[in-house]
Image (cartoon, rainbow, N blue to C red; front, side, top):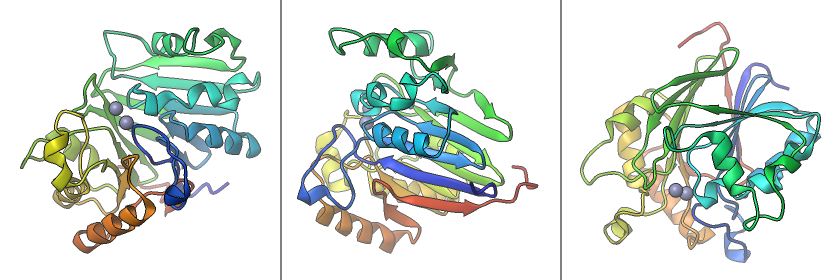
Amino acid sequence: MDDDVFLVRFWGVRGSISVSGPEFCRYGGNTTCIEMRCGKHTLLFDAGSGLRPAGGALRASGVTDFDLLFTHCHYDHIIGLPFFAPIYDWSVKVTLWSGHLAGRMTTRQMVDEFMRPPWFPVKLDICKARLDCRDFVSGDVLRPREGVVVRTGSLIHPGGCIGYRVEWGGRVVAVITDTEHEPDKLDQAVLGLIEDADLVIYDCTYTEEEMERRRGNGHSTWQQGVKLCEAAGARGLALFHHDPTRTDEELDEIEKLAKDRFAGAFAARDGQTLKFPVSLHKKR
Ligand SMILES: [Zn+2]
Ligand SMILES: [Zn+2]
């Protein structure tokens, strides 16, 4: 394990619904799931269908105590949870976090509601792992593990959604999905979460050309991601939450356009890993 590296691995980069087929092979078809390793600490963001292969990898590398943070609970962000092998393992402890339903439903209730008949054959109590459910309110600063700081903020999305800023070892990675920007406006909450970030993982479901027809769906564009990153002094931009109809060729083209505008931009792919060397003495 690299103790001096902040590792980001994309297990699912697709939005709305998982896809398969030859036209989606290179970027992948699993819905949202991101792994971050801050030295020996493992954090997962969202439980889309990408959570299933993430579970296999965690098992293979002997990780038995980790955090899973939800941005929100639309299907594409939770559908992988019942198929996440570690929750059926006695030796595992998972700390689950959510804040988008604050005052309406606890994290425990959210997971209970989702994993039960008639939606799923068995109830949550079949899980053998220790599930420690935590609730927070948007704006809270979380400290899930020693030295790891997670700042939270509200995104613009039907039903609510949380954006995260993860700070560890002098590095910053932000998860900003799902969110809809207002025309000709930069969201101050997002700017705060992504300021000076090494990597911004941003909801790029649509292009600006498509956006007018898609208003109200709660998503954004790569063009808006570029503007936000430029304004916030962020260095990397991962185009994320790809529209389910977007083929590999179309994503190649979008990636090229985005890179021309912002050198640190790329279209995220399932299985892709990024490593940021850290300075463990530097605090931010
Ligand atoms: Zn989504
Ligand atoms: Zn959503």
